[in-house]
Length: 196
Image (tube, rainbow, N blue to C red; front, side):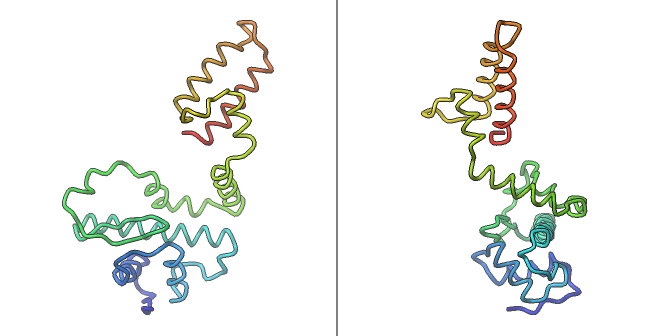
């Protein structure tokens, strides 16, 4: 394992580490390597604390996006950033120049996100993540209310179309029920969390 120079910026430290693993490395392994090397840029508290984990992850990804920008600007390489495989790639002229705006890059380069995110925010982020990953009863109930056919893929466009149909059918001005309309609106709010 390389010795980490505390005077080096985290992006420079990452560049050195990533050059040693041409096949790439996972975010977890990269964090472990930095912590074992006593990286002064990351919190040294246990990663079992969710706020420490969030801050470590954020600082790592901030440095990765800064490194990727620098490599592209210098035409010296490209950095693939994926939690499962962070990998240095050779620079290919024009291949990455027309990339679309990257909301993740914008998020991680905004240090206000780091400063303003507290323990309760991290808890909400984790809860939201697991809800999206696992689905849940509320999602199933909302899909049932919308009578979405299982053999056709559920998309945001189909949900919006079905929402308009249901509102048209059940609006109180057209003889429908106010309670039914409230249920439809609630189901739409739920489904918008899962399908964007």
